[in-house]
Length: 248
Ligand code: BTN
Image 1: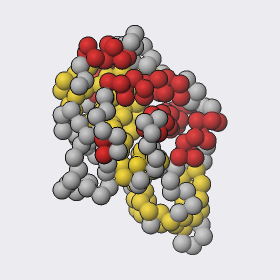
Image 2 (image 1 turned 30 degrees about the vertical axis):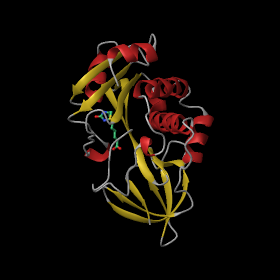
Image 3 (image 1 turned 90 degrees about the vertical axis):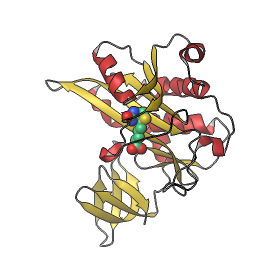
Image 4 (image 1 turned 180 degrees about the vertical axis):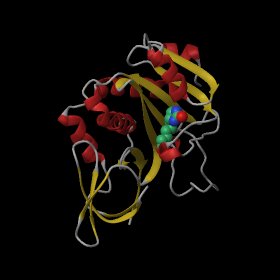
């Protein structure tokens, strides 16, 4: 059960807001950031009714079934490309620490278990007159969503399909510590190396839907700031900054 009392126990002195229901934890965290929220502050909710996903999608989970949070940070502008990586690596390690195998990353920052999505990540930045004011790092983890009979039955998974009876407040505390550690070292080579090592599609045939069309080929490499390098059917290297990747 998530509750203010339980989160006070697990999050200790960390500033947090818990909402039974909200539109999007990213929106609440963004308002708090602009209002002076300390770095590392967290907004979490039991239910989101207008949760956002990547590429303009929505993100919804029935009440009580997911861990949804937004983490406040104020990175240097040069470190912006690494915020999503930090989120992905922090989630990957938190799940691995539960004893699960088969955990990997789908470029850029989805976390998967045996090829099925368990977590999505949405960093959102706010600017004023060209100055970066801060970022909220939104993270949604499927904890006990029942995907049976849904369109996601074969592509998504919940943590409790592998480890029963998870305590979301405890999970959040474990994740928050890893977020603190990695967001304090955004430009570290070690963060990039861990992210790259987690990527499951490098060296494999892929197809990527981008805003300008679909690119198919072999995922050869990732650049330091996160772009994916794909060798297409003509042998030409294509650099992809954003898109939806699938095994080709
Ligand atoms: C994706 O996979 O497309 C990213 C999903 C991100 C969902 C999280 S849930 C907490 C935070 N608040 C939001 O509105 N979205 C993120």
